[in-house]
Structures are given as structure tokens and as C-alpha cells.
Length: 326
Image 1 (tube, rainbow, N blue to C red):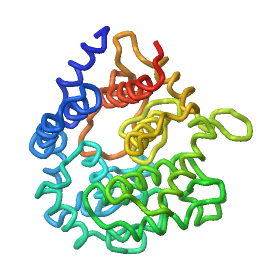
Image 2: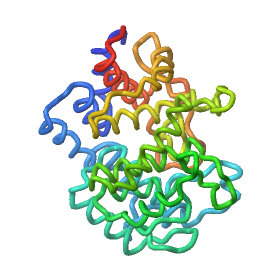
Image 3: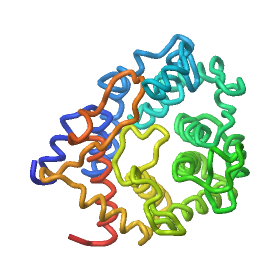
């Protein structure tokens, strides 16, 4: 693979969850074409496989955030587990399970009736107590057609003075974090896409974007140094983790919704993405969070990743449609 056509062929040879996004985002296929491909997520490949692990009550692994049989020793020895309902729903959203399908509608109904958060015991669609989790819950709920406005209102009220969010706020933190902020931003964006948002949620989303943009997506505001070297490394699945490619993909999605031009402050991160392209035209997976999963969907650290490549190619296509650069 030495040209974009060969890379796209490689992506099209993958799972339906990748194929439909390639068709929509890279090939500009008609909506009828990519919708037909997206419908296969429910019945083929990774989407169907993840759905096969669903419990009868609509949950995964018997819990909202943690598996039913979770032991804290597992977290310390093997990493955070990713098999419970929260992360499974987010992965189905990433795969693109059609939210209007009967399976999707039934799933969110069952979860609303059966699932309770590990921390606090609240019904699932009322949200947890922590901003990072609630940001993803809003994104999943809005995508799958659930009324999550009460969680949105809570998140708007939990914004910090610097414009973003931090899940350690309850423990006294007064500075936002990149990870908490991107999780909330993705939720607010999905809520806005589904409902139009509210004046308050749109303003909160703008301030959260500014928090990330004024730091060029990865730098400390005070020193200009990288806030975390891992932000420069590409991670998948992100789960709750932040990296600059996730942020770029968010800004692309937000701009496509609003019609805004890319902010020039994204340019440094865009150049980093360009420089990370391998000789064969793909992008590598730098790392994945450790911990229990239902199954692996990448070929391993250091190997070309279809997910990372898809995200990088669509971000660059969007950027270069505005700023024609070599």
C-alpha cells in the first residue's frame, strides 16, 4: 500500500463498522449506499459479535460500569475492565449500530429498566456522579434516542472556570483535564446533533473547545510543554483516554455539524498526524488500554491500525478541503 487508493481498498476489506464510515467520509458515497452498509453492523462482524455477549436484561457483563464479578485486584493486576454496559454501548456507537433498529431500541429500553450505576445506584439513563462517565453516557443516550437532557444540565453546571471539566472536581480539582473535557464535549456534540442543544449546552461546548484549542490540543498553557506525552501517541479504543487524534476527529465532527471552518490552532496537531503516516500510507496503533475486553479489534501495538488510519484520513481530508496543502 503506497497510495491512498490501496489504503482505502485495505479499509474496505475490513469490518462493516469501518467500511460504512469509509464510504461516507472518504468516498462520499450516497447516503443510501453507506446506510445499507451500516445496517450490516448489527448482523455481521464486530457489531454482531459484541451484541452476542449482551445479557438478557440488556446489560453487558452484568453491570453498568464494572462487570458483576469484578474484583478490585483485577484492576491493579491487569487493568480496568472494559466489558460492562457503559463501554459496550460506546463501542456500539463507534461501530455505528443503527439507532433506529429494533435491536438498538430494545437495548436502551432494557438498560433503562434494569441497569443501575455502581456508584450511587441511579437508573442508568439518569447518569452517574462523575463528569467523564456522564459525558459518554450523554453521547450514547443522545445517539440512541434517549432523553439525556437532565445529565446535560448537570454537566453544564459542573464546568470549571477555565472552561472545561475534570472528573476530580468532586475531590477539589479546580483545573480542567483534557480527558474529562473531550468526553464531555463529545456528549454535548451528540446531544446537539440529536436535539439542537440548548443555549447553555452550546455555550458550554464552545468554552470546552476553547480550553483545548488554546493549548494546541496537547500543550500546557503555562509552559507550552506537552501536558502528557501520551497525547501524541495514537490510542484505540480510546475508552475514556485522550489523544490528539481523538480531539481532531471531534473538531472535524463539530465543524461538519455547524459548517464552521477548521480553527488554525489545529494546525500543529494536523502536522503531527501527517508526520506519523507510515511509508505504506497507513497509521500505526501506538497503544491500547490494558484490561479485560470481549475481543480485540486491532492487530497490536506498532502495527497498522484500520481504525487509526480511518480517523487520520478523514481528519486530513476535512482539513485539506479548507486549506489546500501538499
